[in-house]
Amino acid sequence: MPTPGQSSNGSQETILDPASTSKTLPSTPTKTTPETRSSNPLPGGKTPSPTYAASPLPPPIYTLIPPQFKLLPPTATKNFSHATSFTSVCINTAIYLPYLLSLCLRAGVHFHRAVFTHISEAANAHHSSQPAHIVVNCTGLSARKLGGVMDASLLPARGQTVLVRNEVDGMYASSRTEDGEEEMFYVMQRAAGGGTLLGGSYQKGNYDPLPDPNLAIRIMTRAVKLCPSLTNAKGIEALDIIRHGVGLRPLRTGGVRLEKERIGDT
Image (cartoon, rainbow, N blue to C red; front, side):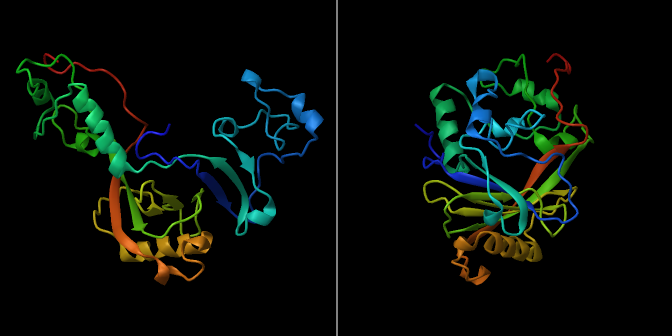
């Protein structure tokens, strides 16, 4: 049974790769007969996709994880060099996060809001009035300015989205767009009437919290072009906009910092 906020209809997600006449693929997949596929079992008893069975290289790991993974035929990949399809989920965070909060409250977790200027102050914020033995620092971008941390390796990766009431028959995403490396394409319909999310962007070092109208136009234009069912091919004017959103993803040069450290008595 799906958890609250999780799509229960087994949505098909399509990942697209924009067409490029100069792009060279690392290997050329080869079609095989059913007999060839059955003679190339994978660990755990899985059978490789017919596209990868005859390849001298092992199938990419992403072909083994999602259910119903398959490569789409060229006739289904207009404007793209190749595309894949698989079953995935889309979580409506507006429903799912309160659900997780309720589970924590039921388990006896205490929540407290406070402003700290130094990481060591968090050790004295325990509801028991006793000093905490462990403090888990998940402050994201705030770790740049938090005393005792001051991690200058952190920077934002700005994302911008448009939430609409229009519905689609699946989820769609592309590995890149024609509008530059900092822009993305995805269409994700949230469960339980949560609307459809159109994206997006990945702008490193951009702290602007306000929506960019020009970027919003490009996001919507890409969405209706690559997913015509959004508006029945009527253009962005037929999008029923709920709101524009901006989020600053925490990004860290050198990768995620995951280590223990003693600061003061904690």
